Length: 202
Image 1: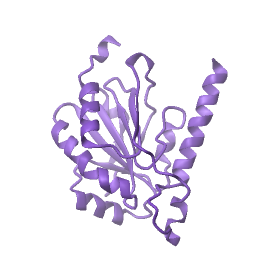
Image 2: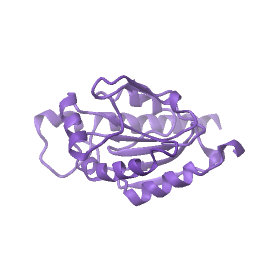
Image 3: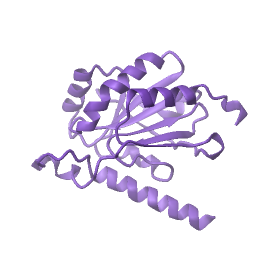
Image 4: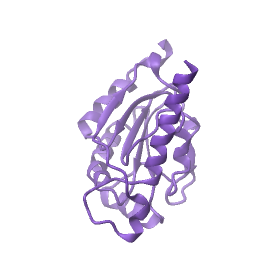
């Protein structure tokens, strides 16, 4: 059992290391300033959901918010469902899914559901802020250009692509992961199902 856990942890750590070193592939010619975003194939939108009895606790995760508006601390979201989306302004699939994420957020924000982005591999805040303005993003994002905050997930269920989305249940456990872009319909159903769970019974 211990060997299996160590193998899984090593695999997760390796996957996260690739994510933090790479980017998402859009078939475009690489620019010099994108050198550290290459070498990673974008996710295909694969969805994994975990039954309550098999969920792992989310790690201690926190970081400064984009725009200097304080910090986000996952521990302060206890009792809420949290949708955590990893994105970059330079990533075409992130641009495609941004309006869909915002649409779901608009409809569930008053139902004990929090959204937080994790902006990574943007070397300055300007492009990331322009991205949020362009797509009307109103939920906060952690600014994590070097992927340091995301390392918190290396021993759990890490994001494995940019974009990736994790959904954390009201008990602070990772309930679902999407590797790659997600659609409004899929995310809405996923969040609805997880938000409706009675976590006191699990």
